[in-house]
Length: 192
Image 1 (tube, one colour):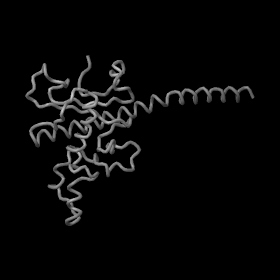
Image 2 (tube, rainbow, N blue to C red):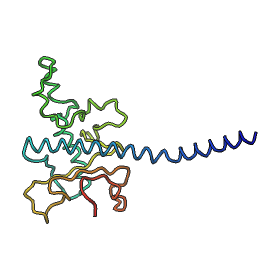
Image 3 (cartoon, rainbow, N blue to C red):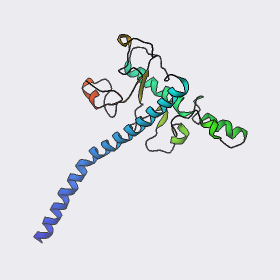
Image 4 (cartoon, rainbow, N blue to C red):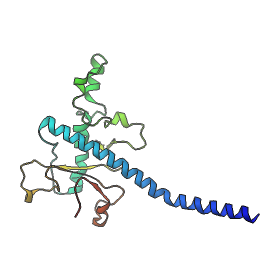
């Protein structure tokens, strides 16, 4: 009987340790998903820049976080292929209305596959969703990605971005206005 109680006690202790570690495991899984999507977005932005000679620009008002959230809509519009913001890739809409076949030449404007809302409807962690009336690229924490890009001819002292090209970041599960928690953000620049 004592041996049985010892075994049950050990199992309870191990189960408690497992349950205590679950939030950390889920946080790491979410962080890995954000990093993977960020790499896809960076690749899509590079392809866009090669195609058009510049990164998609967004007008800056001075509030970095608000401008970054608006940038999530710009990422969606220019990388998903859904330029009319209808929720589906425009080339697919055109092909369905014409002959039902999508050729490779019609898919050139999709820089990040499966970013359109129609591809993410049934997903637990959608890559994009409509928020506030506008489609946006979302991270696995349910927050919009932040994106800022300025014209390349701005001097370094007038620049609002950390990188000369663009800033892309996820606030993860932190408060965007708490400067102490900004170290936990996933960014495409090095924090000092």
